[in-house]
Image (cartoon, rainbow, N blue to C red; front, top):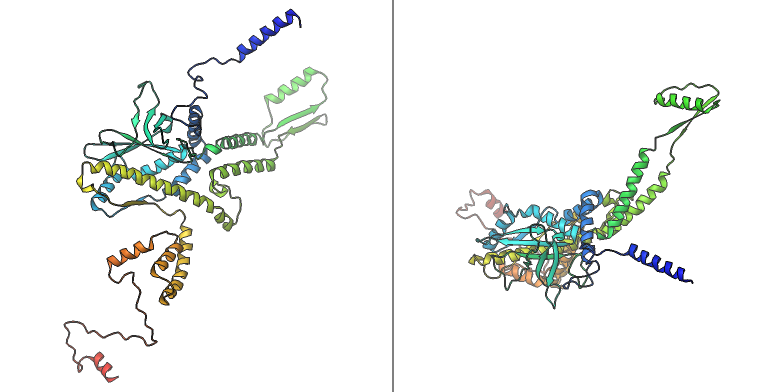
Length: 472
């Protein structure tokens, strides 16, 4: 290699490095870095922001994404949530909080479930007035820049740092709720996450695994709609013998000036032949491609195809069986959502208790939701109906105890209860409730005593009923 070649190689290498170099700026300086409070189980900040923005855009523009989020909320929230509380003062306050016009929880719970499904994270801001009434708002997950947690436990947040804006270039962190140091004058944030890997701070949206497939299905469907629009389009080709190029152009100009209308009649001599060219689309193969894309979306969302307007099978039994895993997924999500609402209500009550002595002390309450599937209730009711007679016979023969009977009955009803505790509560409400019934070992039925009505004097001569009994 000569001196000239070495000189040229250095110049070429320098030019290539300059062309491929990336100028550092505020948009790419922090790519590949993590915050000190984050772990390697979380996405990078830019990646998480991109996924959240894509999920929101898909929910806004893609009908399948919107339907997946709506189905989750419709099954989890259903016809609404019910608060069960026997404490009179607590029940009255919870009802006031639930129906307050600034909270309006019957409608807000659906919005909270939508946000939890759409972003995988729910940041609930709680503010309390001087009277002890709390108000909740959901903060967008894209507005949270960093979650500051304890050094020894990443699942215990201390504060939440908001992203800077033009109005506030350096916003102050908002404290997380801490029952030991909480006071009503400050607003706090509660964080809830789903689809969160172990050791991570942030959750994952339900739409995250299917975002690319939603995009591909939309592109495929748009291409098919565009092609089908021109499916009936065609071009006329006129073949004739022309003596010169000028004659051919003159004939083409005349036809373009007055093209034949649909349904018109064309008359041509033997020197001119007309033919049409139109696109040929093979729709059968395209249908299979679209179905494959939609199956990938349904599998990622955990829903059968008939939930997404795709009747894959015309058999009702097949459709019902395919919905079983989906109902289990909705039950798990409903269980988490009900716990989340109970946790929010506990914080609300604890803040109210600082200004209202009636709420001091420990009392129990629960939040229940609607059943996921009404068909399961019918099946469980039939199973329990046929089982009660068998269990009652076993109890009469003293082959099974009361608590075991109660446990098995509720098991066939699909509920899990503490049989001993229920029997003790039943015995406390009524003396003979929950005890073994008296068994008549003889075959002779026990006669019922005749108790005449009080205040009425029985005269056999005048009373025909008593007279007939005496005669018989």
